Amino acid sequence: RELSDLALMQTENGDIFEAKKNILVCLKHFEVQNDSLGKAAVRGLLATIYLKDGEYAKSIEEYGKSFEIYSELHQINEQIMCLKGIGNNYVKLKDLDNANKDNA
Image 1: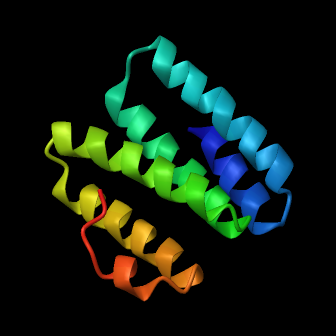
Image 2: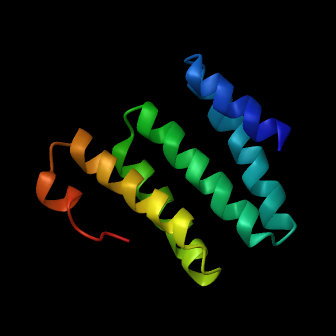
């Protein structure tokens, strides 16, 4: 948890490289532990980092993966957050047609 918090702070401070590195460590940990909820949360954070870094396609992909896991876990509020994130990426891309669709 602390490493993901650090990555989020690094993102806010503009240290995207270190943030990505720390989030990927978290993701590997949750994959080894087979922790679906942890993987979904970390993928959502990774999507946020990609969004802030202007890597919109990667962000959309990570939000989509997170959405799928949250769907399996019946986490409705988190699914909504993923859809909002996907929509925000499409807005940044000025692709308003896709921003209004259910893309997950």
